[in-house]
Length: 171
Image 1 (cartoon, one colour):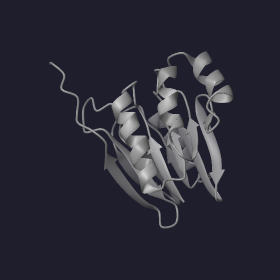
Image 2 (tube, rainbow, N blue to C red):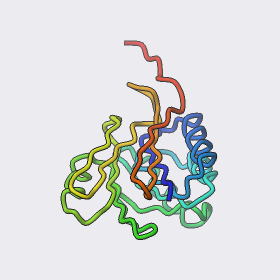
Image 3 (cartoon, rainbow, N blue to C red):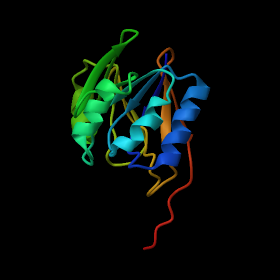
Image 4 (cartoon, helix red, strand yellow):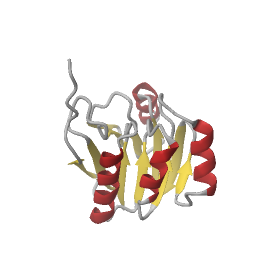
C-alpha cells in the first residue's frame, strides 16, 4: 500500500493542492495529514484525494467545530480523529500525532509499524525498533522547500516529494 503523509499546510492552498494531486498521480491509496491544516476552507482540497484521508488537529487548529462537523457530514472520505489518531491499514499499524515528543514516545512502545507527526517542520525518517518514525516536512515552505512523503508499506521505502518553493519572507 502507498501512503501519503502530509503535515503543516498552514492554509497554503497551492501547496496542499499540489501535494494531493501528486499523491493521486503516484497512486497513493491512503493520506494522513498530521496536523496544522488550520482552516475549514482547506477541507475541499483534501477531499480531492482519491482515497481515504485521516486528519488530526495540530497546535494551530483553527475552527475545530467546523472542521470536525464538515468531515462528519460533507467530506465523506475524510475521517477526523481529533488530536491524535490510530488506524490499521492492510494489517499495518499506524499512529499519528502533531507533537514530535508524543510521536517518539508512541514509536518507542513497539505497538505500531509507523508513527508520523509534524509540528517542527523538519523532515525525518528514523527506525526505532520495528517502527518507522516519520515527519514529512511541511507544506507551508517557511524554512525549507515544502515536502510530503510517500511510504510504500510493501518494502518500507520512503520518498520525500517537493511540491513548491520556499516562502520568501523579509527578515
